[in-house]
Length: 271
Image (cartoon, rainbow, N blue to C red; front, side, top):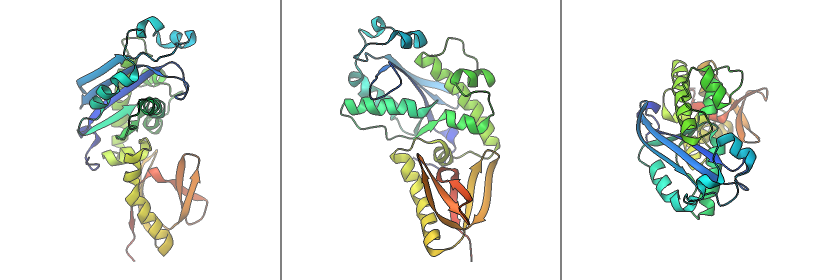
């Protein structure tokens, strides 16, 4: 995949799941919704009810409206997983989900149960991008859609309806971040990508350059992204700092740090 291409040149698959609960280890998928778009035009879609192999609690049914009777005759996840992954794995595909860690964690867990490989595709978290693009009162999909003027013709919390709301939010986020200079697919993935193998490979060259600068004690020209847009500075890296899920690069003193994913480019400053 060409990470230097514009994100709008990709085949974007907007994905949403409905589940029997919030914990991937103890709950299961009961609906998959995926819509493929190219430059805001729907190209194809894959929407299926899934038999979760367990009870759908009443409190969960009251949210998405999927009953045990609805899924009784539906295929189990392992029965439709190959078909679903074929849809998701078409060339130049980028998966976009609102709160992607939730959806991808569930898919990975279900694929693991089915004895299949986990998702090794580019994945963008639209929620994380939305936080950078807009100041909203809250960031639930419903509030984001309403705040950004995205038309929701049907009640949310069914997979396809949530997918279409996610797509609407994404295009507004895209336009706002493009004005701040965010255009290339690789930059979008560095900032908002799910940290799978694709994301880690994207970070390797940049990380190696920073590590060399730390060891050899030379300054770097850093291009990074803040809420105000792209910034470029010449800085002296002094080390890495890990905090829960994020890794930071320390500069000059320990008071200055930038999250590794927000650093889009790093090159040696000419001496």
